[in-house]
Image (cartoon, rainbow, N blue to C red; front, side, top):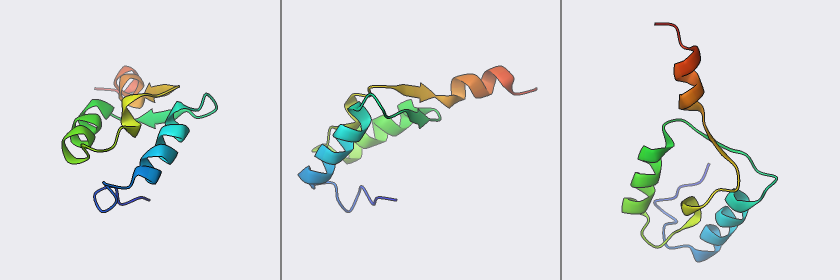
Length: 69
């Protein structure tokens, strides 16, 4: 776990997270991730790690497809 609010001005952390998220070997999973990226943009204006993903899958899309009503 990483306290992004406490480390919001940490350029080194932003660089490391950018490297992880843009690495072709990483698969980033999210659930309704657009609301998280909005929160990142509003709360972490100096960080940019969340702006690009090499490989990303929003699990909510698949959850809705398999969820029984």
